[in-house]
Length: 206
Image (cartoon, rainbow, N blue to C red):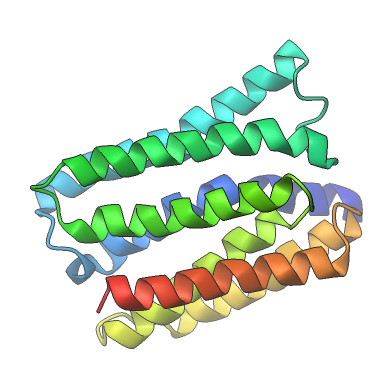
């Protein structure tokens, strides 16, 4: 039963869901974080969800069905390199698209740029070490919530912050329980995601 729970946690809070949560916060929970017209926010949000979550997930399932990927759990470094590299390309394309749209608030492309930096950095590390992607994403989410709480007094950060801390503990414990990572891989992933996003979003949302 515990293993099933850990698997569910790992699937539900897998790394690709983090950009969807982050942009949900930026566009709808803290609307003053961007100058984007309300009528346009939903369109941009759907685009981001499609390019950072839906398409990468479909690609990963396609790799699994074709036999290129041995397991969706990506237990080895070899299993992670191709999916992570393809995902990095999707994120870079999304960044390029938003950057080219000069009429759009720069906060959007800068935010996806930071997330892309984390993804590309994680992918680079993956070629020689198995840093936890789950905890890299969770650390980034924690950092974004803290920065939003610091920058925007209207954002009541207490409960989202407590939820993010709790999720970090649950997801990290689930990854360790499943034997997916060693503790150092979890801690370094958490620190990497947190530090890059904390410093980056502090500057982006200045």
